[in-house]
Length: 110
Length: 240
Image (cartoon, rainbow over the protein chains, first blue to last red):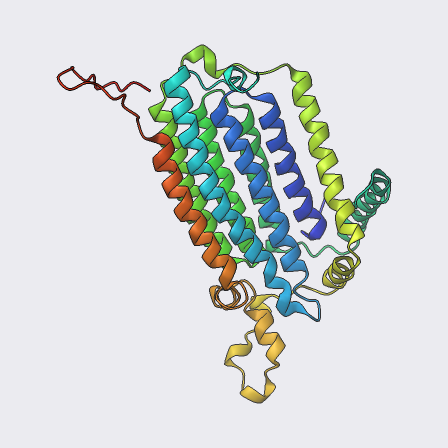
């Protein structure tokens, strides 16, 4: 079983991490763990950006290949903001309802 | 637009790529240190990501998430994205995880609430949805012809390796400019060149976004006290 780590292997790793993230969002009820699963998915997406960036680097236009890094950088910024705001929302919800079970958050259900 | 029909060639492409990987792996037995470390960190990342999703207490979930982030940073380094690897450790494993741990400690959760999970069928649905999204990614990748050509040429030749290009010490007339640029792929120097030239505006927008995030967090998590007539005793619990 000697397979070199190429495009396919890196994309498979990203895919597996993304699937685990979706799994966590749908399966768990604890809002914090749901949040961590979202982080996992963001990381998987970043890995796809960096992978394509790397494997485009030997293209004749290789100079442009660093754009993938820029996208990953921006998505890290967005992830940081999202975590801060989301955790603040979770804290406020816990203060009001004394639970962070996502099934109990049904105020907007109507 | 990506339609359902494009799923079939995408699946075919995935199978082809898997077959290629098996074939090349069997024929040429040059299994380098880079490959070994890729598999090592990939296994660590997948295992700890699985533990994040299945662990009962949020604290152990958070600690496994730290392990995942470190493994991802190592994989970024293997992809010669040095700057992103450092940022991954600083931002994700540092700042974001500290936030998570603080919030977990702030909320005192009941024990029985932690272990609640949904029916396993929903987990299976998540699995199927995840696979569908991956296939969608491959499909959109196949549809964009340019990227496909670029990546094909990228897998045929070896991707530029910093170790292969000690060109910086070579004499000036031997140095091919593009080779130097290739050798600097992913370094902080190249990243900053892009970040502060053609991506200057998105960079500034990102800083604005962070500012909005800071203000938003303060506004959301502030305790609002009810207006009380003067003289009444104010309880420190804070009415929400």
